[in-house]
Image 1 (cartoon, rainbow, N blue to C red):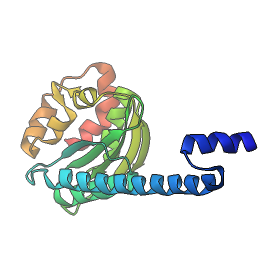
Image 2 (spheres, helix red, strand yellow; image 1 turned 180 degrees about the vertical axis):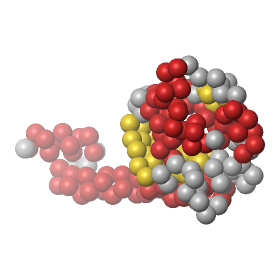
Image 3 (cartoon, helix red, strand yellow; image 1 turned 180 degrees about the horizontal axis):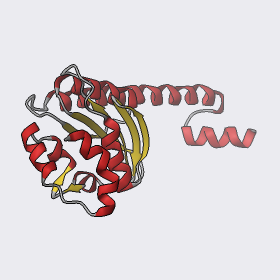
Length: 193
């Protein structure tokens, strides 16, 4: 124990009698830094949400903020002001992303189901997660560019969610799928039409 105290004293550059106090100060400094980071991330996320043009039906954001509670609040805020889907992706610390996707009910109906978008992510990237029709959360291994480039008849997820009702109907009417894709998408395509 004496050797450990001496090593800690050397590392902390304090006398052996002050090691406990120095370690407590380090924990306090760490907690302060964590809180400062959370405050900064909340501010950054709020600014990102506020900068989204109001005329966008759907929103797809990527952020460095990693607090799921902050993300959930931001998705709720986006769903309250955008009639489509709102998704926020953040790094999982490895080679992928965690995400929360919300389906807006601002039109008073429950016609959107966030699980449909989640299913596309599962089929394409092997995403894991789920939730209720209003909101899902999960994780996937992919790069930002890969997530945004998931194509359905030449359009990525974001572009499809940006279509007007008439454009979406025409898009779905002209949708060309393989037999396997048709089996997978049959229920969703019928629901959209």
